[in-house]
Image (cartoon, rainbow, N blue to C red; front, side, top):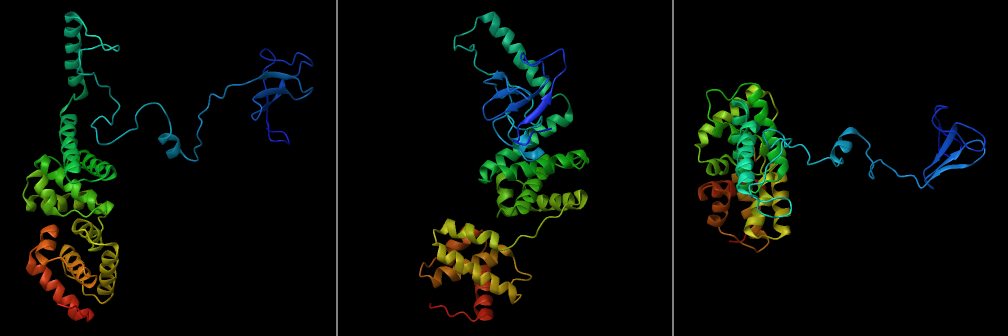
Length: 315
């Protein structure tokens, strides 16, 4: 209930609070002046109220969960989702003073049991090892945190559906990372992921296809546009070259010149053409080293694009 001015009107039980002037039990909360005012006579019952609510606004449940200040947010990158506590490894108290040998022995036992309780069964041990491997791969590949979170969720779903049995943890984690990169639009190839975890590329591809089939998730196809900006940055090309490469790629898509071709090779060839057109020529060997493809692949894609789009390139 509210009055015409917009202040909240509320009533309290007779035994709790009454107006000392007129014994009224209905009051108005004036939020602008931080006062409680009697609705009948206008007597100020209480002033300088303290707002115990949050200082932020939330319009849905997700915003409310993110903006709460009750500890670190939940994360799927830790096997217990970050809900457990950690005991510091330094043998000092809160003031920085060294503790006695007796307290040190007690603290050592607490640390030991803390480690055991955090990982209590085989599933948690599996998750702890796999999620640490995902974190290592993500840091080595310089991937953002959202991809790590996505890969962790994918691996957790695989564990829940018992897809890990009979397969290596490294292979499933690599497949989950590759799937997360594809879903989030990050330009990472199977070769790069295979180099980070020292696993055969065929094994990662086999695990990836198995997980896509069993988890029934949609993974968008990899497109050359994912790799053009990456190659341009690695080669130090200007923004003009990147935009020209994107325009060449879009025209080639409309003419169906990219169908049946590898996205990495097409991106490398369009980047090479753009570098020549803007007079920032890079050799095919330099681009091949960045794209992890052969020079023959770049030359073949280059020849197809030049002939199909009728581009005049000065040699």
